[in-house]
Image (cartoon, rainbow, N blue to C red; front, side, top):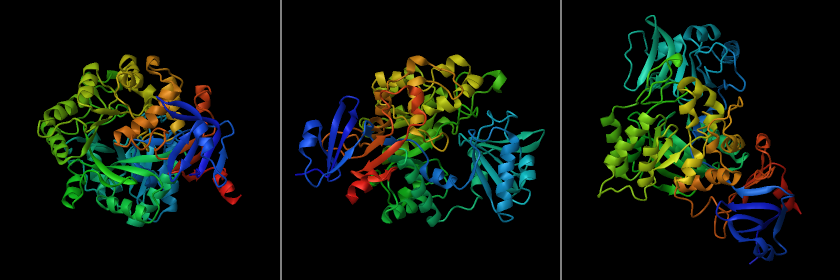
Length: 544
């Protein structure tokens, strides 16, 4: 039985426990053999790819991102801090988009960081009014937990100065006047009046996002909180993308489970946990417990620094509400993927999970998850481990927001955030991820952060939590597969495993960490077939 493809000429990382080999054979979409056995399996018809000293790894697995919103956002105004650091530039971009759009059309932007703007604050509705006087405008902060709307957008949403704050949300007012800032669940007041994309636009966005991730070495990803943009129609769009052959990544899908989400509607339609197949699996429900530490809405026991504004953050729901949601979705059989960043929110979630764990509906084997889990205590880690509750963190938050954490929370608390080494040593299987479009989806930035604990301004935070390159890749591959009940199929390169493989432009296990920034994926395989081929290497082999 000859192999379909032989990789050799460079190191191949099989997995944290397995180490490296120098050859790998693929047959019928799976790893056939390794090392000398792989070379022996090559026959006259086998395509032979010379790695040329590059390294191959199990393809990356993006365990927590918002894929459809990311794809849709590619057509929105880019306000990310890498490009936009002044209020004038933000307003210029909004104004340019408005000039290119018909009057009355919505202008949507994503990714601004008020902490990085020269004015050190959120834009105001009146400023957006001047930039786009004839269009409703809504721009979302990088964290996704707050947005600013202009006056026309607020009018369309029916929001006035006497509109009460919804449960778990804040409509900011200063001097009795609306500023345009909406936080947490108050954002839905504006979101609900933005025309949703149609199915064709969503399929285009899904495909575009998947193709971009494939170009970075991902073969698997998650859409966390499906239904947050267009309701139940998002489920249909994903199924259409798969039916049309436009879903190149394997997807683990998480339904929006807040009361305004689609989880109950999906249940009523007959959707059940683990519906779908290995290419598109519906396995989990998400509920929000708090906001973001950068936006001062993550819920903490100890207040934010007075210089940052004080307060202890925002709980999305009171205890009885969120505990009832956790019990409902647990008993329905869904994996719980619960957003909690601050220690007080993590505690609220843990208490609810512990109450839901019963003899009739035990937690054992369910692999429930706390998403982000950024500021977790030792006792909380112990209780999570006892029930098999997994942390799904975003190390890249330390890179992009670490200096803001110090400004908001002080150095000591910030140093302990996202403790990757501690989690790994304790056997908690932390699945590294990005929360894109909150942060960059570039996996090499995330790897850099895990190896250095360094922010984008050069601040080193909690160096004792640094990982080795092997550990970091393990967290970005096998741990992600484990959270999706897929570690028996992907995340390592052993005979019988899916041939989901990324060939990287540099050997990330030997280069200096600084060189990670700028490393690329040259080839990404799913089932041994290319979903991205930067230099056309496999196409050239096929043409021979």
